[in-house]
Image (cartoon, rainbow, N blue to C red; front, top):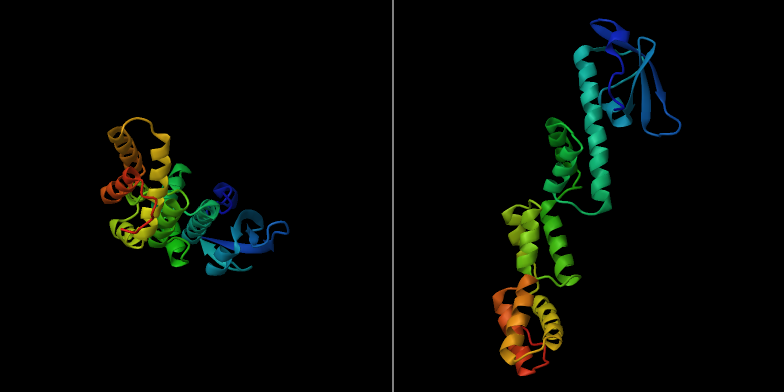
Length: 229
C-alpha cells in the first residue's frame, strides 16, 4: 500500500519525524515520495500531500503519520471504486460489496462512499432510473422484473418507486405486445394452450397482469393494432 510507512523500526522511537524530502514521481504524475529523517517512508497522492501540508521541514508526530496512512488507504480504495463504476454504473450497495470483497476496512469504505456521493459519482436514484430505462427499452423486461433486480442491488424502496413512476406505460405495453405476438406465433396447440403459454412467458419477463391479459386478448383475437392501455 503506497501510503503505509515501510518500517517503523528504521525511524526509531521518536516523538516527531521531520520531512526531509518531497519528490514528485516522474512516471506517476500526482504521486509524491515522502522522506522522513533522511529515509524514504512512503508514496502519497497529491490530495494527501495538500490536505496534510506535507512540506519539507514539517515535523509529524505518530498520530499524524497514522492519519497519513489512513488517508492513503482511503485514496487507494477510492481509486478502486472509481475503476469499478467506470466499467459500468453500480449501485451504492454493489460498490460497498466489491470493496469488502477486496478486504477494505469498514471505516475506509464509509469514507469512500461519502466522497463518491459528495462528488455525485454515486446516485442510487439516478442509477435506478437509468437501469429501469435500459432494461425495459433495450431488453424489453417488465416492471416487476426490473423492480426485483433493483431490490437485489440494494436500491432503497423510495428510489425504486420513483423509477417505476418514470416508466412510460404505453412503451411497456408495446414491448409486451411485440414479445407476446412473437411467442403466440411460435406456440402450437389449441387457443387455450396458446393463451396459457403466452401469458406465462410474459409474466416470467416481469410484465404486470393487466398488460399480460390485454396482450393475450389482442393475440387471441388476431388484432394487430397497438392501442395503448
